[in-house]
Amino acid sequence: MKTKKMMMTMVFALFGWQLATADEARPITMDKLPKEAVTFIETHFPGEKVSIAKVDRELFEVRYEVVLMNGAKMEFLGDGTWEEVDCRYQAVPDAVIPPEILASVKERYPECKILEINRESRTYEVKISNGLELIYDRRFHLIDIDD
Image 1 (tube, one colour):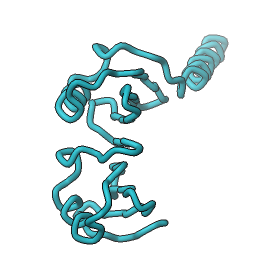
Image 2: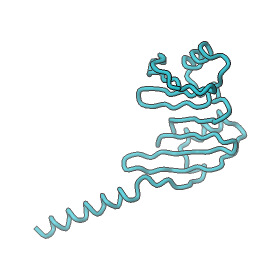
Image 3: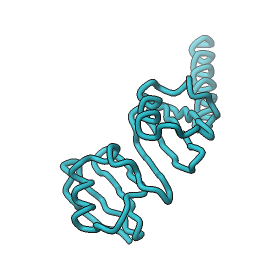
């Protein structure tokens, strides 16, 4: 009975420690990023220097955040897949944006630039330079517009 009680105490202590240390973003060097994330940055933002790279270890997942010297910010999943690209005042590189979304935005808002794209489990959210946020489903159909 004592050993069972001690084991339960250890399990709860370990679980509590993991909760306490989860959700803390820590600075890292570029060589600690997943290879896919490094390739993404080098391909789509050639010559740009990294201002800061951080790893955020949550309870069951790891995420990375990279900010470039030009102000562009990217978020990556643990495997290096991009989740968000926010270029603030510059256009997101066309090669990052799915072609169907790029064509849709150019057709509907030819004067606008795509400043941010966020890929979620079932949708893509695109912010354009006129202040609108366009939401596309996984089949790249426009399903909502927020202002």
